[in-house]
Every structure is written in C-alpha cells, then in structure tokens.
Length: 119
Image (tube, rainbow, N blue to C red; front, top):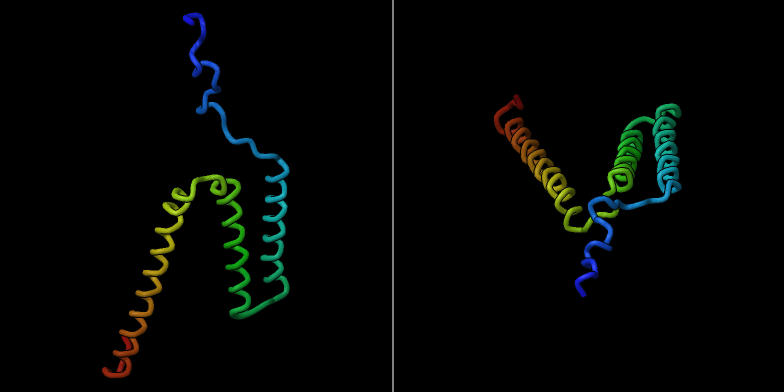
C-alpha cells in the first residue's frame, strides 16, 4: 500500500489545462463578424437615412460586440453567476441614465412652459 502513488499525482493539473475549442468555431465567428461589418458599411453605401440608418448601425454594432464577448472572450463558457456579475451592472446604469434623461426633459419643458424660457 505504501508504494501506490497518491491519486492526485495521476490527475492532470487543472491550472495547465484550458478549454479547447475547434478552430472552425472561430473561423465561423470571424466570417459572421465580416458579414456584419459589410452590412454595416452597406447601410452607408446605400445612403440609408434617418432613424432606420441609426437603428441598423447600432443593431450591427451590438451583434458584433455580443459575438466578440461571447466567443473570443469566452463568456459563452462561463458560469451564469459570472455572466450576471459582468452584464447586469452596465445594464442597470443604462436604465438609470434613461431615467435621468426623462427627468431632464421634464425639467427642461417645465421651465420652458412656466418660466418663459428653457435655458
């Protein structure tokens, strides 16, 4: 019994092993990023104007950012609690900024209507 090595000696070191993802996944994501970028440039090339232009540009930007964060930064393979810890605070800040914008518009128009000027 004394000659048997400990069980931990046979187990691979978890710190030296990483996740192995197939290169085809990264190539597919790269291709999708290229396609989304081309579509974003086509919005300008086709002279799309107004709210449709900005909606499409922001949509393509958010899709590209989501792909980069989820695949290249390995967020898709993280635990859900870590994903929430990273994504929820910026979303809460965006909600608070929106609330402040509504409040600022209310204060501006209240001044403009009742005090005769907005500035």
